[in-house]
Image (tube, rainbow, N blue to C red; front, side, top):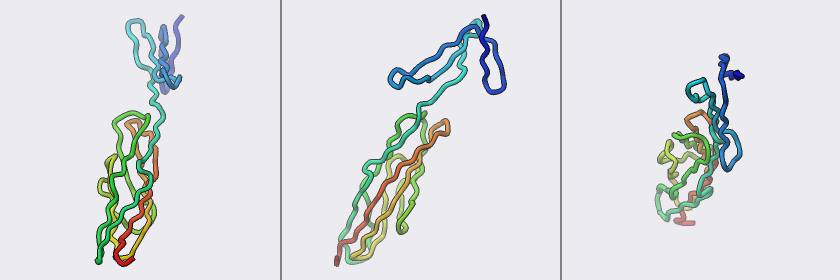
Length: 150
């Protein structure tokens, strides 16, 4: 008995259908149909994408009698799920103007120029996009300080 598979607006007759569940998540990852001579991929499903950053909060300080660049240690975005390759986009979402060293990389640093006795907070968001267009975002916080004269 032939089966009907609808892909988009196209209907196809097939003899059998295979469904592949993921072993740990117990969800369908791929559907294949037998066309009489071979198994053909009908649909593939990417696992949901999520993103975390580490450290989520960082403090950076210098002790300078003049305006100085205060630079955080590395902040890394880690993706779970989705389908590689991934693209990254770091943007500043609050606080005085800061620099993002590598705005399109998974790992970056943030910097801010501060005068003596100054301290500022800033927030940054990383958005990751996978090869299927799924997106996820995570937030990192940074506190910048120039402790001279404080």
